[in-house]
Image 1 (tube, helix red, strand yellow):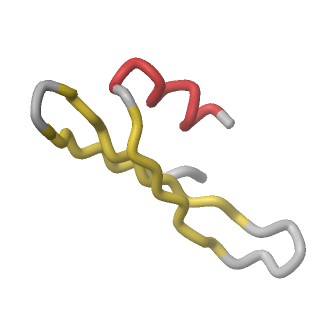
Image 2 (spheres, helix red, strand yellow):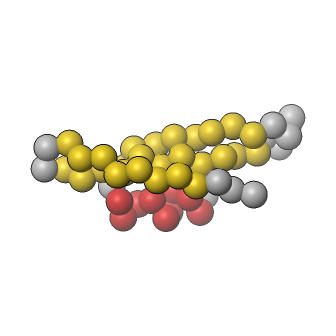
Length: 49
């Protein structure tokens, strides 16, 4: 199960997106959140990993 939250950020002339996804730890079974700020076209690749 994956939760996705995407927020748009603007900094100067660059347009950036902050993506957050939940990742389940195989060792403990606990969920952690992974955050990354990237270009909008790279969000789908980040969420598929």
